[in-house]
Amino acid sequence: MSTARRSPSSTAPAHRPVYVGDDRALLDVAEGIAADWAALGVRGSFLARDLGTGEQLGFDIEESTPLASVVKVPLALVVLDRIAHGDLDPAHPVTVDPGTSSVGPTGLAAFRYPATVAVGDLLALMLSVSDNAAADALLDLVPVTDVDARLRAWGCDGIRMRHRMNHLYECAAGAAGNDFSLALELAVRDEAAGRHTIETLDPAHANAGSAAALVGLLERVWCDGIAGPGATAELRRMMGLQVFTQRLASELRTDTLRWSGKTGTFLHLRHEIGVVEAESGERVAIAALTRAGRRAGLAPDIDLAIGVAGREAFEALRK
Image 1 (cartoon, rainbow, N blue to C red):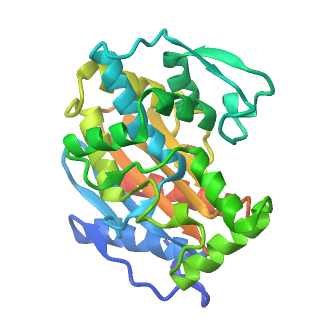
Image 2: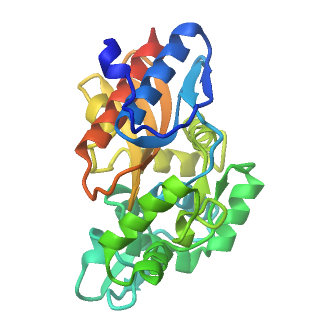
Image 3: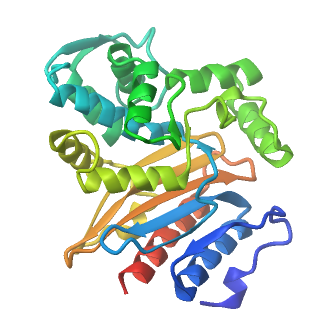
């Protein structure tokens, strides 16, 4: 590992991460990942945990961060739990009208005409292509307050659901009109200043969570320690159908590895959470939550850095 690659740039934020690692070698990997991110002008939090041994590495793991579409994972678990208990029929048809549904580039959110879709298929669209309209259609059936209350009852205190997906865009439009480039500029400026012009980027008002809480949720889902086994099994299956592979999956999907995850992207936020499973039996849960310090709608270098972080953490933990 070269020293040059690990040296943060002179413009990196003046921030000292709080590291976790079960031995010196794991701490070194965590420190290296944080330095790589800082060199790209990225702040964030990261945690990887071996679900067999409990060993872990990361940094700033308790920092609460707006989750963007990552919040669709706990939402899906609550809906699947309702289905498992017979309170919701997965075949129940729901009509989604694009004229009144949520904004987004994928799935029903990109449709031009009304479509009727079963509840179970709304879940599949929400997790596989991150369909915002599908997510908000599910929230018509299981309201935000009910989702948040169920998370509290399950002891998921580090994850909060406070608003529908379309509220992300409503708040951005309220601050920047229809100028999404201006909204991105405001997000980056406010990140440096420690303030929040856009309400849904404020962890106190956003759908928010920490890397520690998200990895804890994944661990319980993969070990059938939350909700019912039917709900957790279906969530694991659906997370394995995600089509986006530019972040953690880019370095963790081979013939001998299986990646199941969920990305989240909004303005300067680029996240992913998930679990990598090896044929040899190792299972590692990972949460990577990032906030870019530069104005860029596309940032493949940041996506790559997230993928490299996941691979380095997985390789360190499986030894």
